[in-house]
Image 1 (cartoon, one colour):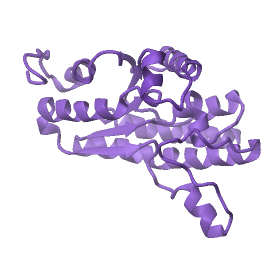
Image 2: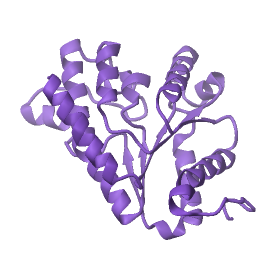
Image 3: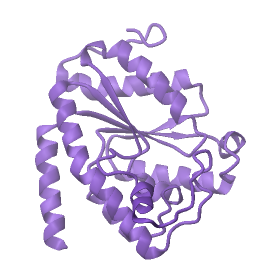
Length: 246
């Protein structure tokens, strides 16, 4: 296990050294924080400001190198509970062994595909946006039916390739609860606190105030993106004069 972890760390460092100009963005936040609207506004901004950067690729949660677990389980002949897309937290977490296997399965998806995605992003000079990311192993494990000890999930996250920039949307728990009744205000508060902790542990992890309008939040994100990339590409300082123009 130790040798495998060392090999994995070395592999990631090699990929990271060859993809310093990659543009992989992750967007996090509790359900109801406005991630979808924010991403749509962010796409408008990227297409306006970084118009020469080429196309944008989007992923939901994971790269999908491996098929969904539910499809595999059904092919084997095991009956599983159907997941209501509108209520992803409705199902109970899996047992500890099943949770560990599920976590490993997801990790393989990130470990073997994200480095290649980052390399292609750098090579072809385009943006990649993840709606949710592996950080959800800590922030919202119930969504993926994971019930593993914190140290296991933290270890998996440490050896998972990281985005170049992460935006976490945090809003008033009462406001989010009105949009998404499935989550209690206590659970929303807990997720907000987890996101704040992650922002203190990982570089290029930015907390955005989702109580503001989607346009204002996306504008702040665009300014952050420009500041991150203008130094390495010799770009001038960004001056916002209209919705997203400069």
